[in-house]
Amino acid sequence: MVDFTQLQEAIKSYDSARENLIKKSRDVLKLSKQIIYAVHRGEMENAKVLVAEIEKERAELNAIAEHDPKMVYEGSYKIAEQEYVEAILYYNFVAEGKLVDCDVLPEHFILGLADLPGELVRKAVFLAGKGNVTAVLKIKDEVDSIYGELLKFDFRDNEIRRKVDSVKYDLRKLEDLVLDLKLKGKLEL
Image (cartoon, rainbow, N blue to C red; front, side):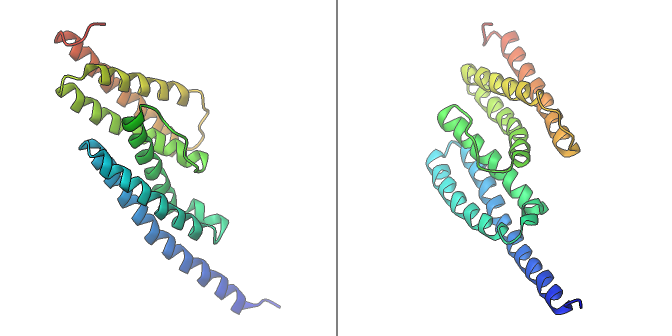
Protein backbone atom coordinates (compact mmCIF):
# COMPACT_ATOMS: atom_id res chain seq x y z
CA MET A 1 0.00 0.00 0.00
CA VAL A 2 1.26 3.46 -0.87
CA ASP A 3 1.89 5.71 2.12
CA PHE A 4 0.72 9.06 0.75
CA THR A 5 1.29 10.78 4.07
CA GLN A 6 4.96 9.79 3.97
CA LEU A 7 5.24 11.01 0.37
CA GLN A 8 3.64 14.34 1.30
CA GLU A 9 6.00 14.77 4.23
CA ALA A 10 9.05 13.94 2.10
CA ILE A 11 8.05 16.50 -0.52
CA LYS A 12 7.17 19.09 2.10
CA SER A 13 10.51 18.52 3.83
CA TYR A 14 12.42 18.94 0.55
CA ASP A 15 10.47 22.09 -0.33
CA SER A 16 11.16 23.58 3.09
CA ALA A 17 14.88 22.82 2.85
CA ARG A 18 14.89 24.19 -0.71
CA GLU A 19 13.39 27.48 0.49
CA ASN A 20 16.13 27.73 3.14
CA LEU A 21 18.70 26.91 0.48
CA ILE A 22 17.41 29.72 -1.73
CA LYS A 23 17.55 32.24 1.13
CA LYS A 24 21.06 31.22 2.17
CA SER A 25 22.19 31.22 -1.48
CA ARG A 26 21.16 34.88 -1.68
CA ASP A 27 23.37 35.63 1.34
CA VAL A 28 26.38 33.99 -0.33
CA LEU A 29 25.61 35.74 -3.60
CA LYS A 30 25.41 39.14 -1.90
CA LEU A 31 28.71 38.62 -0.10
CA SER A 32 30.36 37.50 -3.36
CA LYS A 33 29.38 40.77 -5.00
CA GLN A 34 30.57 42.75 -1.96
CA ILE A 35 33.97 41.01 -2.05
CA ILE A 36 34.42 41.77 -5.74
CA TYR A 37 33.35 45.38 -5.26
CA ALA A 38 35.71 45.84 -2.30
CA VAL A 39 38.62 44.39 -4.27
CA HIS A 40 37.87 46.67 -7.22
CA ARG A 41 37.99 49.64 -4.87
CA GLY A 42 41.25 48.45 -3.33
CA GLU A 43 39.65 47.84 0.08
CA MET A 44 41.55 44.63 0.73
CA GLU A 45 41.10 44.64 4.52
CA ASN A 46 37.34 44.93 4.11
CA ALA A 47 37.45 42.21 1.44
CA LYS A 48 39.37 39.95 3.82
CA VAL A 49 36.65 40.38 6.45
CA LEU A 50 34.00 39.63 3.82
CA VAL A 51 35.89 36.49 2.75
CA ALA A 52 35.76 35.20 6.33
CA GLU A 53 32.06 35.99 6.44
CA ILE A 54 31.31 34.26 3.14
CA GLU A 55 33.11 31.12 4.32
CA LYS A 56 30.78 31.01 7.34
CA GLU A 57 27.67 31.61 5.21
CA ARG A 58 28.77 29.04 2.67
CA ALA A 59 29.27 26.43 5.39
CA GLU A 60 25.67 27.05 6.45
CA LEU A 61 24.56 26.80 2.82
CA ASN A 62 26.33 23.47 2.43
CA ALA A 63 24.75 22.17 5.63
CA ILE A 64 21.34 22.93 4.12
CA ALA A 65 22.36 21.31 0.81
CA GLU A 66 23.21 18.10 2.66
CA HIS A 67 19.47 17.62 3.23
CA ASP A 68 19.25 15.88 -0.13
CA PRO A 69 21.82 15.06 -2.84
CA LYS A 70 19.64 16.84 -5.42
CA MET A 71 20.12 20.17 -3.60
CA VAL A 72 23.54 20.79 -5.15
CA TYR A 73 21.86 20.93 -8.57
CA GLU A 74 19.28 23.53 -7.56
CA GLY A 75 19.76 26.70 -9.60
CA SER A 76 20.17 29.02 -6.63
CA TYR A 77 22.85 26.80 -5.11
CA LYS A 78 24.74 26.50 -8.39
CA ILE A 79 24.73 30.26 -8.92
CA ALA A 80 25.83 30.93 -5.34
CA GLU A 81 28.68 28.46 -5.73
CA GLN A 82 29.94 29.88 -9.01
CA GLU A 83 29.76 33.45 -7.67
CA TYR A 84 31.60 32.30 -4.54
CA VAL A 85 34.34 30.79 -6.73
CA GLU A 86 34.61 33.97 -8.80
CA ALA A 87 34.88 36.16 -5.69
CA ILE A 88 37.44 33.95 -3.94
CA LEU A 89 39.56 33.59 -7.08
CA TYR A 90 39.47 37.32 -7.73
CA TYR A 91 40.31 38.22 -4.14
CA ASN A 92 43.24 35.80 -4.03
CA PHE A 93 44.57 36.82 -7.42
CA VAL A 94 44.65 40.48 -6.43
CA ALA A 95 45.86 39.82 -2.86
CA GLU A 96 48.45 37.12 -3.60
CA GLY A 97 48.91 37.05 -7.36
CA LYS A 98 47.67 33.48 -7.78
CA LEU A 99 44.55 31.42 -8.18
CA VAL A 100 43.45 29.06 -5.43
CA ASP A 101 41.39 25.91 -5.44
CA CYS A 102 37.87 26.03 -4.04
CA ASP A 103 36.08 23.05 -2.53
CA VAL A 104 33.12 22.96 -4.92
CA LEU A 105 31.82 20.63 -7.61
CA PRO A 106 34.05 20.74 -10.72
CA GLU A 107 31.23 22.16 -12.86
CA HIS A 108 30.60 24.96 -10.37
CA PHE A 109 34.31 25.73 -10.22
CA ILE A 110 34.59 25.98 -14.00
CA LEU A 111 31.55 28.28 -14.16
CA GLY A 112 33.07 30.59 -11.52
CA LEU A 113 36.51 30.43 -13.12
CA ALA A 114 35.02 31.36 -16.50
CA ASP A 115 33.45 34.46 -14.92
CA LEU A 116 36.75 35.59 -13.40
CA PRO A 117 38.27 37.08 -16.59
CA GLY A 118 35.44 39.61 -16.79
CA GLU A 119 36.49 41.01 -13.41
CA LEU A 120 40.15 40.83 -14.40
CA VAL A 121 39.43 42.87 -17.55
CA ARG A 122 37.82 45.57 -15.38
CA LYS A 123 40.86 45.51 -13.08
CA ALA A 124 43.26 45.70 -16.03
CA VAL A 125 41.48 48.72 -17.50
CA PHE A 126 41.67 50.46 -14.13
CA LEU A 127 45.36 49.59 -13.77
CA ALA A 128 46.11 50.77 -17.31
CA GLY A 129 44.56 54.11 -16.42
CA LYS A 130 46.88 54.30 -13.43
CA GLY A 131 49.88 53.48 -15.63
CA ASN A 132 50.54 50.08 -14.03
CA VAL A 133 51.30 48.23 -17.27
CA THR A 134 53.20 45.44 -15.49
CA ALA A 135 50.03 44.44 -13.65
CA VAL A 136 48.03 44.66 -16.89
CA LEU A 137 50.45 42.23 -18.54
CA LYS A 138 50.23 39.87 -15.58
CA ILE A 139 46.44 39.86 -15.84
CA LYS A 140 46.55 39.25 -19.60
CA ASP A 141 48.97 36.37 -19.09
CA GLU A 142 46.74 34.86 -16.37
CA VAL A 143 43.61 35.06 -18.55
CA ASP A 144 45.60 33.57 -21.45
CA SER A 145 46.65 30.72 -19.15
CA ILE A 146 43.07 30.17 -17.93
CA TYR A 147 41.78 30.08 -21.50
CA GLY A 148 44.51 27.67 -22.54
CA GLU A 149 43.63 25.31 -19.70
CA LEU A 150 39.89 25.50 -20.43
CA LEU A 151 40.51 24.60 -24.08
CA LYS A 152 41.85 21.21 -22.92
CA PHE A 153 38.36 20.21 -21.71
CA ASP A 154 35.60 18.68 -23.79
CA PHE A 155 32.60 20.45 -22.31
CA ARG A 156 29.23 19.00 -23.16
CA ASP A 157 27.21 21.43 -21.07
CA ASN A 158 26.02 24.41 -23.15
CA GLU A 159 26.22 26.85 -20.24
CA ILE A 160 29.85 25.98 -19.56
CA ARG A 161 30.74 26.15 -23.27
CA ARG A 162 29.17 29.63 -23.56
CA LYS A 163 31.07 30.85 -20.51
CA VAL A 164 34.34 29.43 -21.81
CA ASP A 165 33.69 31.23 -25.11
CA SER A 166 33.29 34.47 -23.14
CA VAL A 167 36.81 33.94 -21.73
CA LYS A 168 38.09 34.09 -25.32
CA TYR A 169 36.45 37.50 -25.77
CA ASP A 170 37.82 38.75 -22.45
CA LEU A 171 41.28 37.65 -23.55
CA ARG A 172 40.81 39.53 -26.82
CA LYS A 173 39.88 42.69 -24.85
CA LEU A 174 43.07 42.34 -22.81
CA GLU A 175 45.17 41.78 -25.93
CA ASP A 176 43.63 44.92 -27.44
CA LEU A 177 44.38 46.84 -24.24
CA VAL A 178 48.01 45.70 -24.32
CA LEU A 179 48.28 46.64 -28.00
CA ASP A 180 46.81 50.06 -27.24
CA LEU A 181 49.37 50.57 -24.45
CA LYS A 182 52.12 49.53 -26.86
CA LEU A 183 50.92 51.94 -29.55
CA LYS A 184 50.79 54.77 -27.03
CA GLY A 185 54.39 54.05 -26.09
CA LYS A 186 53.57 53.02 -22.54
CA LEU A 187 54.71 49.47 -23.04
CA GLU A 188 57.83 47.90 -24.51
CA LEU A 189 57.24 44.44 -25.90
